[in-house]
Image (tube, rainbow, N blue to C red):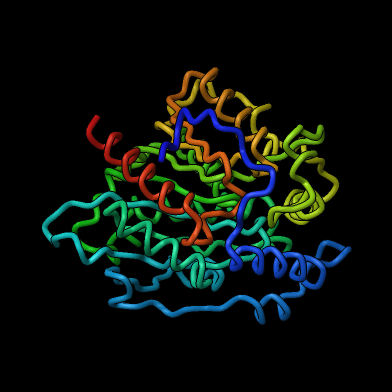
Length: 335
């Protein structure tokens, strides 16, 4: 099944698995009861719906463990995944992964995020470092970007890399993330391009349906903004909870295409889009902007991909993403 260059039109009513339909219903309930009109979050209600899983030594061929940077923040910690199918003598790339959740919910030990990270490590053949970053509105912009950059510096300086498996190759790092995590990928990679690391090298970035915004509505926002697990009402709320108070959606954290990265040495990028995602047009604009800025971009679009498909392993786009990410990382590392 092709993942690029596919000219078929997206189905306006895709045949969704019952699990996904239930998830969309729960998403609506979550939004109504957890996210308040004053842009605060009912964390107690969120905890009732967010199933946590501990690290595991054997689950689905991948071992995982938790580690911290330091004692300054209990919210910033890491879950590290090591695929057992690879030999201990094989040097393995490192993927630093940022989860989605509109900057306001989700964690490295959430069941769906843990499951995706585990599959990502096994299918790509990489050490995955899943970052549990601080959430808005308690920690607004630029908190997750600061957290992400702190992780890079800690790996480079050795305070985290000592906890990584011995065959982790930090000279072959990829920054990856989904939705809000895809937004973090962009900003952390841009910041990293302006910093001189001693040992760490960023080989590429993988932005999966990156959460981007702007004041002017796009056609895809208007067309898909009332369903599919993510609505315009939700995205507007997330931006209000994350951006500095009083900021519009044209803030550079959201509307990234208004900034200039032409002078920065950014690594090759894989950007994943979904044909039924309300963010689809913004993601297309983002890819065009990167290309016009002289950056290497590989774009894959799944015509029937709804926002957040990577949380559901029974959707066909899930396995397609694994294949495309595997091919991208291998191609980049061979060059």
